[in-house]
Image 1 (spheres, rainbow, N blue to C red):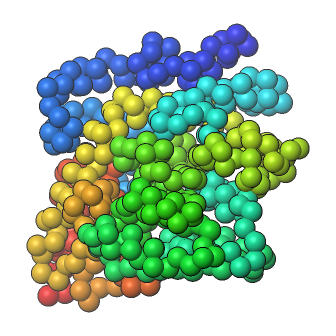
Image 2: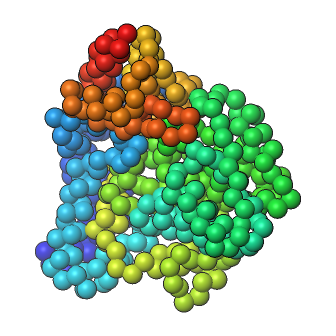
Image 3: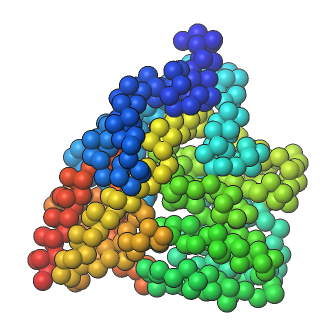
Length: 432
């Protein structure tokens, strides 16, 4: 491929929107998807969520293994075919002359990609840093905040382990005080959640860490209400959005937080190993970068991207994932995945011995749900589901949560969930 063609391909994937004629998405899906969208154009998002003809078109965009039913999309989601193709093309280009094509060609795609991510996030491009996952994004913030000995951070026992360990390391290294509150999920009381954080505040509290969607069982936390309460006390808020970005229909500034990190390889279905960090613009200067940078006190968000050599093909593949996502629409996507979660959850909840650990209320849950069977351990249940039915889930055996985590995605078929429901019924009936 001549150099000019390579530059054109970069523009095709990084600069353009989904239905622009020079995107892989357009070349592959435009005709079918536009027809499918027109067919449901008179329906609202909740009605489209139940239109199987429409979602069958979307499902064809994935190359998932038909022999294994993946219901652990909360861990990592498969990338659509067009995203895989973009990464493969960029990888082939890179290996024709790595030093040249990485730094002179692909590296030029980061700024338009930053703009696409910023539009999706509802933020300024000058607040968006591109990295590899939520752990890297959030650890950059946690280690970069100028906290000192005696300063307090409030978190939750159900935050993600990598974040809890980061605060513990800061406590050991710098003498900060890391406090954790706990909850009994499912919890459908916003004021009770906010009050739990507020009651933990002392004059030394500097930061509250909130997980937008609790990864263990999918509880949605009232981030905006917690942030407003925290700011009234002069406290900053960092949000772990690993499971919310690309799933819930929201803009980051609407959360009223100060810092936000996410993985893009979950519900956005971007290439595996891609992430994003958002820092409120007036907070960037004081935040130390995790890796070296010439001026660590720079107000430029790009100081957080000094990672050295990285996977440029993975990074640039994010653009096609955004195209795929926007062609569906954030609201339609959220409603569909919520519909799929409730489709199976309401059915198994009626089975003797089966317990849900997640709300069915859209204010408090969306995709992820925990479920257990009395007398069956999480490990036994995940093993039985895979060995007997080739259904992949993940076991949760942590604190007061003992269940499996089940997470569909837009490529999940209702027929797959029927199979899962039947499998749960058979396993539960044998324990009755």
